[in-house]
Image 1 (cartoon, protein in one colour):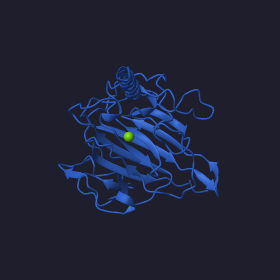
Image 2 (spheres, rainbow, N blue to C red):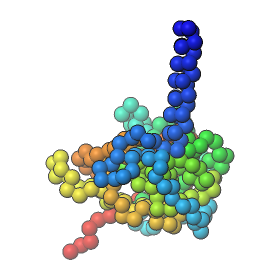
Image 3 (cartoon, rainbow, N blue to C red):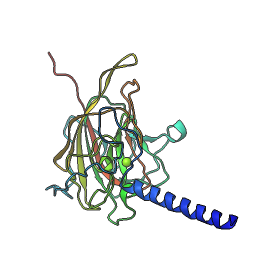
Image 4 (cartoon, rainbow, N blue to C red):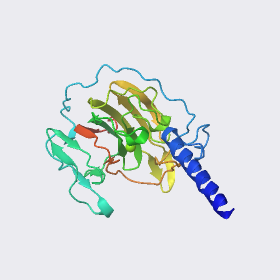
Length: 268
Ligand code: MG
């Protein structure tokens, strides 16, 4: 009798665990709500944005404007560092044929320079060969200030939670539409970031971000709700200008161009 009971329990636990794991591919139903929002973080029932076909997929590599700080143009990783265990080191990503590529297990990379208000341009591509699904398919990300992630994901016909798609403010706002290109095609982000302002521990002005994905506005001067977190609500911690991070999510996403323009106030 005891053996039968034990068998049922294990089976039941396995089923529950399997269902739990499967749920997370499409979202969560137990995560907290953002204050004032009807959606949970990664809410499984949050509507997925409609897919549209951009006109710029796999375009030729762009050219940085004359006043941009070019952080990567295909030749070297000298403007980036890895920060494994909090120690700055050489980035472990692969460099070759005009691209840098995430090497799984080799960590995130950070810009050496710190940035506040900025315009940033990224050209990236998810792997041509589709492997994995949901968040395990072509996942990287731009973490502005190392805190606020604009998701990079192979979101072409890839079911996942709405606020985790390409162009999402991760865990906060899905993109307005899904403007993803096919796997392996070059895609572009043009992002305008307004850094948060603090007075002591108080947020005087939250951060705002506009994201243009392949020529399509997918975040329109959206307010960032604090640090972006996996399956949890983030908040603001006061900080000065900080480096941005390109995420290593253990899938070989490639980059070929990264440039930044610092945004300053118009002279009086
Ligand atoms: Mg990511």
